[in-house]
Image 1 (cartoon, helix red, strand yellow):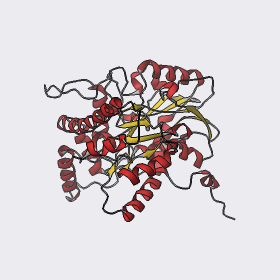
Image 2 (spheres, rainbow, N blue to C red):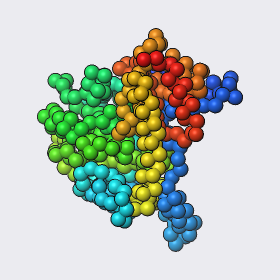
Image 3 (cartoon, rainbow, N blue to C red):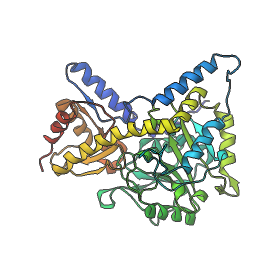
Image 4 (tube, rainbow, N blue to C red):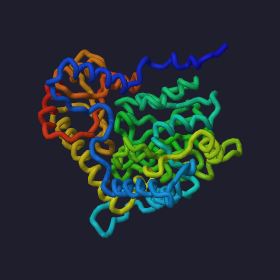
Length: 410
């Protein structure tokens, strides 16, 4: 008799962001005249850069020409994009075309082309990487955290322990005496916006090496880092290539949420039980993945060109300015908040309302038309907090922010 994977029964009934969409759609239907400001789901609102648009057009034309047509591509990605990614890791802090614009600040990191694997989104990559590890590993996951980390492990019945992120540790838990085999780190963090310093991240690398563990390092928001002491890559930390895999995406830095392109860095020297994980991932991808769309990869390559980087930096600055605006208003009104400076997310607390975070979500939606994300959707330690994103373009933002302030009297 067929048996199904009953681990799915241990998941919450709905994925967090599907539940938010459902609630918003229901509200819109009942209140079609109410204007909404979506500060909830972390989707970008600005279009991809013109360099990527032109590269996509050219790639489409190639696909329509029998002389340049591309069928199945390499499962690990085309060399032209992998080489550009390696170049980008090395060119940190350089000025582009003598312009007073510095991008990708940080320490130059040398990455080999064969260590780069192109995918269709970090969400997919972070779930799929679990194929490389036995199910009886102990997974250490921050709380609160991006729900995909937890859900993907529940689906395979992994043993999960939590590193609680609270106000007391500034939402940056540090290593303890807990034994863990797989360690999840997201910096800058989703949802809290907190980011590890180099010294803090070194402590995690030292812990992983001591425990013979692996760090799954989600660096999806590194482009928003503004503090020089915050590393953009875990590979800026000495010996990290012996214990870490890094996940990157074009979604939040180049607007590719609808284009779908990501990459995973698996160092050649990363070995467990005398086996190179790079070899396992190569085998896994060649079996289960036929490669990211050629047109999308050309667009991603263009986003990393000089022109593309300048355009995307302007794109990012819009969101950073939105963040500064919100943080300034919160600071002036004594609202407790975290994040925002090195992240597109602001994590804030309401202390004068006797309501849980889902009730607060409903209250904001109904009374102001502001869409937030309830903190408890990211874990128990997120209760009493709400997450808002800075992905918006709205001339009435001051009006909406003033409505937020009516719910918090210092």
